[in-house]
Image 1 (cartoon, helix red, strand yellow):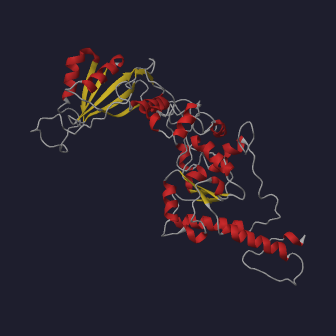
Image 2 (cartoon, rainbow over the protein chains, first blue to last red):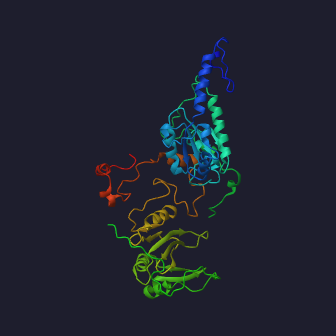
Image 3 (cartoon, each protein chain N blue to C red):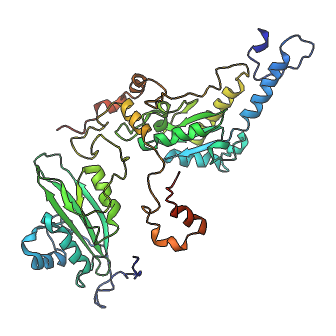
Length: 208
Length: 234
């Protein structure tokens, strides 16, 4: 049982005489350290968030400090999908396919209000949060988030990666969507996630 | 198929002593001098011109639905008009349910530095159909498709009237119509299910992308693929 204890994330303990468990812990730490510091982003920029994302990647904020200087425009060589901007329903099968083309291990950052919830676009054309299409690891709020916000989200994702355990069998499960409906969460959950909130409840356009 | 390209110089049809173009000041809301093309249309087409409005210095000519193509072709071809450029084409539906739905063409004559707005009013209860101006302006292709997609107005004579913004299997109706609810007609789950069922690839053949004109200039390998009937993205 001691073999899969959660490793210390900020302390490297190397104690060969300390008893059981040190080898697995050490390997987890090494692998996670490597993964967390070389997350290659797959930029999926559809709107103004992508401008902030580009600013994050440019020299002022410099994503290269986090090992992310290589934008991977091929999903096959990407680790983290950064969805920056609103996703219309017409793009839903596209982002789903990009996610399915990415290889494990993979993560997803939903950047900005629109990607996370649909934002101000509570209308017929926009997906109300990409978590209804693909699983999301980190949500970055903001409209659009400043580069500091995105970098904070990336650091949160790095924390998450560093806490993973190789023995955790639940981690790398590919979510298979329901073959008939192509949805991976139940329709009732999608409707609940897409509930209008805030001012948009009062929006009326068709008073006819 | 392709026609030679002749550049149009702005103001080239005006007399040489015409004043330089300048932003007009103190333009009245209604009234003021109308675009001379409106008078010419009245003289040429008579009863097909229903009304001429001048609003904020811009002339709107409301015309008969059935004679759109004839009028637009004349405006395009006649050397005294020369409306070379269709800058916009759209539909308008008003909140007042009694008001007719309008289709609007924005024409611009570069040579004469003129702007003319044509309108057709489609009365409620009539079929939403107007003639296509695609035979005159090839650029009307996607504009008419967008208008059809958003308002459901059909353009008779359009070569390929399909949805353009929404995907082709979209079943909820025409989003910019006033009776269309803002969030669409179906539940979010159903909308997502239908959207995910659409195949994002293989919508167009190469011919539809009108690459056929440039076929001889394509690389050999691409020509071979096109000959075998391949579609994009497959």
